[in-house]
Length: 118
Image (cartoon, rainbow, N blue to C red; front, side):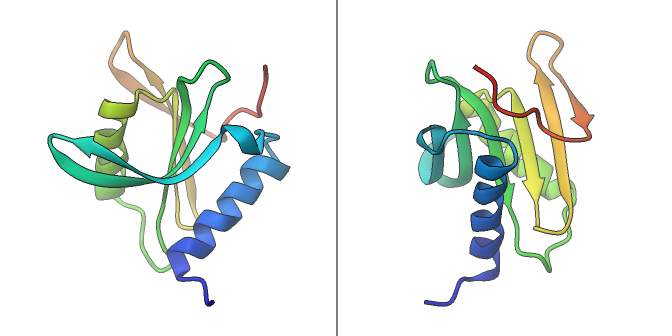
């Protein structure tokens, strides 16, 4: 089986989360369906907290896809349903991270996502 470009990015991102950021495999979920405004969508990667809340959503694009505002709009729509603390958008070459401040309804770009901690 040949990996499609987006799947290649997704698999490498999962390995990064496990090997570099030390997120347990048991807290990582890949390609599940969710409903947003009665539309069925699929997220790429979600990392849960140990209490079942969502820590991180990752949106993966193929390397040839330029990450632009539409990618951030897409992940922001997903986050309306998922309420993750952190968001990541990657095409395998460029990676963007942000944290969500729910009280102030703002997000802040970060240099990286934090490593796993209990």
